[in-house]
Image (cartoon, rainbow, N blue to C red; front, side, top):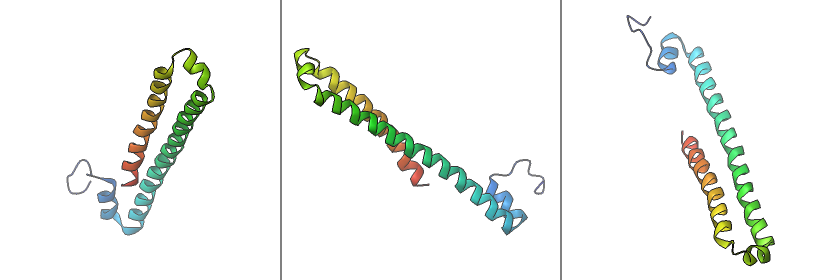
Length: 99
């Protein structure tokens, strides 16, 4: 119990106390978990960008229809929502890449 301490401050502190081999295992486990998280974020980011591209492509492809029903603002709003989603995920991805 680390000389009366009830809770270790971190996994690394606990591993360093015991030995180097366990420290490496502990650190590798942390990097594995972070790596899986980043991979998931990258996939979600790409999916959101694809959704934004699809929205823009459909609006541009159907430009006559969009204009005839005066739906330019609605198309711009839908594209903006999709881009905002991808931006938020991209910000999380940038932060996690800095870890």
